[in-house]
Image (cartoon, rainbow, N blue to C red; front, side, top):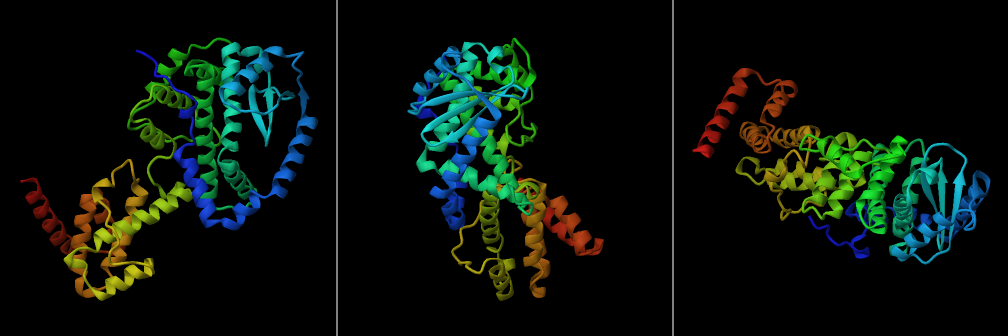
Length: 400
């Protein structure tokens, strides 16, 4: 199989990066203005310089020519024009990190990584770190500003879970971007994958094809969402990088499924909150567009949810609410939304509940909705049976 040709134009911020930037710029303009201010940048630069002097040993081109040569190659491949300085940290865990300063490249090596990686792996490692620099330099530094806002927010012990989740996902997507930079610089995903595995395991020799086959065994419809805090799991990163390099047609959808997963109430990030709000509006528009839901009281209840509600609100296609889009917690949430609307007008209660049960059937959660009717409304068998019989009769006509 011929490897597709990818160039630097293929290295673009992921959609999630732009979604977070757009959210913070639009909804938190004061915070954004502070985080992108010259004062904050100058304070950050002072802190970085002090930390590098305090905690590392500065390497010279004379003492480490191979590392500097690899760095120069990576800079050229990524079209970064900035002087580079390399450092060795004092801790023992193998890794590398970029300390960002505008117009300057500072890469710190940790542990015996320079001794463990071969020339192509070192090139991939530096490509990864310098891809961080490229991302944070793009779009007038917007992606760096977003990263700064999220990290400062996390320093507050009262930071809401949605901010923690956003910072985590932003970091995971940033590592995926940087891995792509590593592959571009090294001319393929192999050296990037073997360097990842070496850092993760400490092994001296790694076979990229063998590890990819192992990683692919963990894939499938039931594969779990990444639990990574700052970096996706190594097997996931390797699979994601190879899929991107091969230009797999479903790569972006696969990445969305493995990094973010379906909407879930217990892991909503800022982008997910926007998505859930839009989904709720569309769901209500679809739900109330039925004869059983036409009353002034129901209209008032809808506007209590959304004061800016319009009669022309676009309705959601309920067939899109599959397991890849929402999980059981969001199904449960939609059940409560329906119950709120069903119970506001006693004159329409029976017909409204049947309509809600019909809607739950369409989105695949009728049994859970019946359980909710039993537990929350305390409906007895004599009240439930007419609803379930009516629904069964309708379903039978659908399948004929």
